[in-house]
View 1 (cartoon, helix red, strand yellow):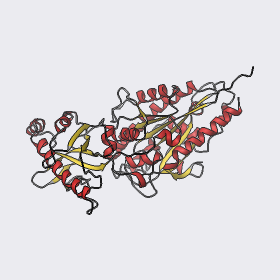
View 2 (spheres, helix red, strand yellow; view 1 turned 180 degrees about the horizontal axis):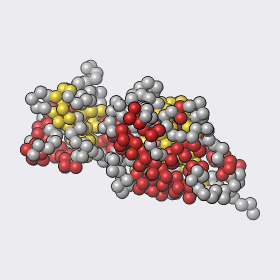
View 3 (cartoon, rainbow, N blue to C red; view 1 turned 180 degrees about the vertical axis):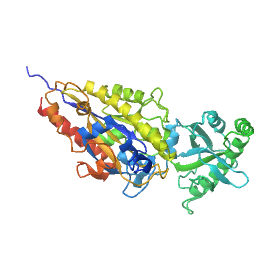
View 4 (cartoon, rainbow, N blue to C red; view 1 turned 90 degrees about the horizontal axis):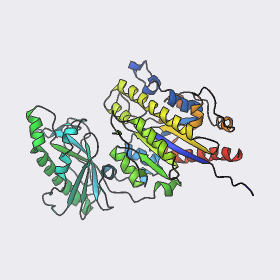
Length: 455
């Protein structure tokens, strides 16, 4: 009787550190935050694996997290993107049909006398205002009472807002001036010949005014105003979008995927692409997020047969860039590294001659401290096997006859940062982010071939 040999399993976990990339800073002796941080496990991934740089969306273009994630997952934003509002709103928990429109929204403050938006983000610690979303649900838009409004809290100062009704179009501008101390914008159609766009722009201006009236007269805001505390009297409506009708991630790449991401806009991309979404205790998407629990959850899910690709999103590093908090970015990177340690050790325990796990770490875009916003630099990426990474920290080597062969899947980069990953030693070179999943699949096939040849 011939013994049946099972096909080797090689699974992938992609750790996405939002806003990872940065530039050198004089307060760090002209190092980048990645160079300055104590990140032994991320460095071990680089030392034991393959490294390079990718351009989010396209070279020389600063992009948002939504378009960057689309590109990273293999969905061309140049052809498919129609606004981030649907991602944010779906991720916040609002179901959408393909005819609805939705907005990514900020609770903000506008000076009623001048019309100047003085605070686009009224308060990152917005626990006091979460219930305001309930009071915006089912509001009646003056002149458009037949349309239905749904609002759901997302995170920090953000919420998602959906409008359902006839003759709606995402081809409109938003009301967000994008910077503090700029005038509140009026919504306009981007196609002045399209009647649906014209209709929707008028509706949005009426909606914005009604929300402003409700918030200005709400007891929460009146009380905080009297106490001299930050309060909100405005909802900035931006990134109007409609739900994308595209193939799922599994249909596109042949990988059964899950996503760990409390941040609404990222969850929304996962929902759009048919990824399995999972809750993690203590995961908030903020500075206090429990990343260790996310690592443990990823290990648990990858151990199951129904998943062979995982996506673990970390938001707080991006916030440090927007907040221009240099030391906190270093600290948050070190916090990520502690979670990577848990991830590597857990997956290494699951690894054997028939099971291996690729750990990939990268970012979606750069958010340099000196600018406080997204910029166009390429982002470093590293990928290695958990069993290879763990060899840097084990006193005794695992008894696995193929480990020596697997250890050869590496280049000569030794540190994970913007400089080392751009060197001539980096095997992946510089490429478009759209090729990231295909690159991981090629590494997956290479590892499978090594495992099969050793059986």
